[in-house]
Image (cartoon, rainbow, N blue to C red; front, side, top):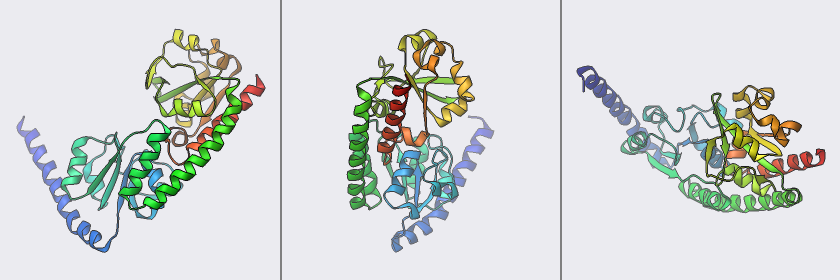
Length: 296
């Protein structure tokens, strides 16, 4: 390690120690008064904490969090997959509820060493794990009864949405989920993803089911998938430059979806959160698949 690098490391360590020292007294005082100060890391975690009625205790969120509207007024601590402990500590949290994808791990360890309680919540891709996540977060923030009520509401709304999906299922439209985190990357959603679960509950058939997770797709594979409908998020559509840019993707014009320009656009956190609004996501998709069916 060079002399300059060593000095930089010492300065960073000293700054973190100072931040931790500044936080220690306020954290202890807040704990004594029973005042919870929560920072959430992950858009789905943020939505869930608010849905459980603890929004008034949230003092900061990560930059991916955009729902509910109240979070826009809260301080942002960076992107949850790459946040800095100093920014979180500056908000004097007593509790950090984080997605399992939050990191780096060293930053989470720094929070723990500063005396902050850190609860890491598993990622989900199906309803059963979504129910468990509600219970985990509800217990962490002391809202167990609210968690039980939220699970009951989720189950009720999902069953109502599935009834709508049953009307779609007879036609079994092939749905291709496209996801673009950046303009230069276009991925296709495969099996065991939140999108695949929502598609299935809405009565659709996953157009590409030969792999799990997300992967780029070749022109040949895109044509072979023969989707009847494209499913994209609002951010993906904006990232790609709008509908016309999307329809110009090589091979897409040779598919039933491309020829008819059939596309369903859903808000990102609604579709991908697998949280309190999953019933709404299924209902919206099912309705639009029914409209596409009638237009065919």
